[in-house]
Image (cartoon, rainbow over all chains, first blue to last red; front, side):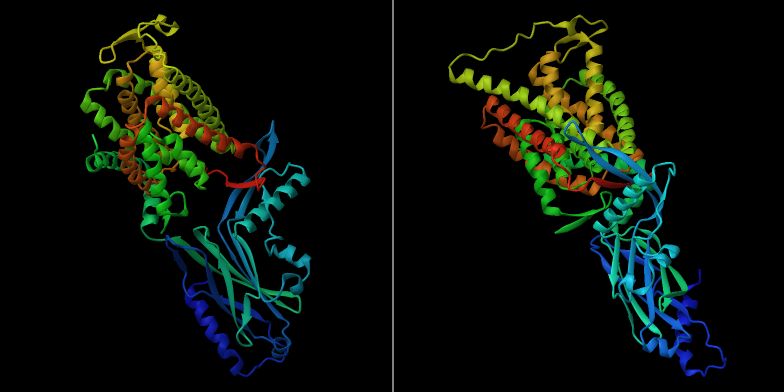
Amino acid sequence: MRGLGTLATAIFLSLLAPTTPARAQTPPIESIQIGLSTDNVSITAGFSGADLTIFGSLENPDPLVARQGRYDVIVVLEGPPKPVVVRRKDRVLGVWINLESETFENVPVSYSVATTRPLQDITEPNSYRQLSLGASNLYMQPADAGDSPATIEEFTAALRERKSATGLYSENVGGVQFLSQNLFRATVRLAPNVPVGTHKARAFLFKSGLFIKESSAQLEIRKSGFEQSIFRVAHDYSFLYGVFAISLAMITGWLGRLLFRKD
Amino acid sequence: MGIYLPIAEISVNVFVLLAMGAAVGFLSGMFGVGGGFLITPLLIFYNIPPAIAVATGANQVIASSFSGALSHMKRGTLDFKLGGVLLAGGIVGSTGGIFVFGLLRRLGQLDLFISLLYVVLLGTVGGLMLVESVNALRATRSGAAPVLKKSGQHNWIHRLPLKMRFRASKLFVSVIPVLGLGAGIGFLSSIMGVGGGFIMVPALIYLLKVPTNVVIGTSLFQIIFTSAYTTLVHATTNQTVDVMLAFLLMAGGVAGAQYGAKAGQRLRGEQLRALLALLVLAVAIRLAIDLFVTPPNLYSLSGAGLN
């Protein structure tokens, strides 16, 4: 992982790049860089989702290809991987009960994609699969590989559907815009229920449908404020927290009697 | 005004919660119950995850039962010895309940189990109360004097060994049913987030024949400790107690309870019981409908390992 300083300088270097005359005869290989203005985002109590802007640049772009708009960029903000259990409800004697379940390892908690164009216009489905790029191509690894492929497929589909429905997996077509020949801006969505932890921003560069290069940066999302302190205390000092909760209840009960007593 | 609940991790409206607390407090003051059996389902209807609704419900119950027990202590209608024995059973039951709670949560059956317990218990208690109070209402209308069970009447419970004397309750009874009742209430408290007053009160009156004036105070006394213990264990093992949520409910609750108690004095006993029965049945029916109606999403996700 590169430090932020390097990423920032990378942007400036690449901005200067077109002014310096090309020395080599063979066209240099394009490359991509992204930079984040901060390495951590704090969400407060009232967080109701936000757009995160990521800037990036192409290095050594071919001006002709760029003018024809044949460079495509896909930016992904991927949440921390966590194991997930998908459960299916079935009717037993008229009552809906969680019956079957499937556990998946290392499922990104969130996955927001921003692209220059619709995914199917950028490259072949096959190359998405190879790159494991896009919510529908993300490989979900079942914990128990012995289950029937049909079951795994069904639960994988359900997992993707639930994640999209809750806004954790999203796709923003047109969310990546070229500001100049080599500077672009990507807007990825942070869902209101965005998980805290280390998120990974990745940018993929495609030239005329061919994958060229990938670049990534890390972003720490954390909660801040009073509510977060409560959450931390509840987890780190759970016994004291419990004692506090009980004392609070008793004091409230006692005060309530004192203030509102009617007998 | 929205507020973010740190443990439940969702944004809720402060006034909805205060009103919810006040409404339940009003009812609990009116009927002399803790109100946990109303708070927990209400929170679940309000999309609070059931595991958090249960643990926070237990926390909220402490406040209302503590303020209630204080006034009973002052009036001398609290049997500490009986409460202590009930409590000993309660701690055992509550520990077992927490264990079952964690197990069901891992199996993904917690929500179902909570709903089923509520439907069965509230349905039974509400149904019995309704029948009893309607009969009482009919009896008073036809002019007949209400038939009271004689306190000297004995049943099988009084033939059990290990008898103990409870002076304040004028009772000489085996400790086995007392411990068993305490354990049962403790178990329900940890799984349902209730104090268990709605089961404890009739059980003390009808099964153990404790004089009615001592029952509520003693039941409240034991509920304070059982729910405090439940709160503590939920806080340490499951981290599901949301103090912010609990405090809002309590604040509304303690205020509402005092007005409820005043309003309750204007209604007659059997009318009160009939109304409470209807309320209990309504909650049970609402929860039962959810069990049978096709859910909008058949699939659900949950974190593995951490839950």
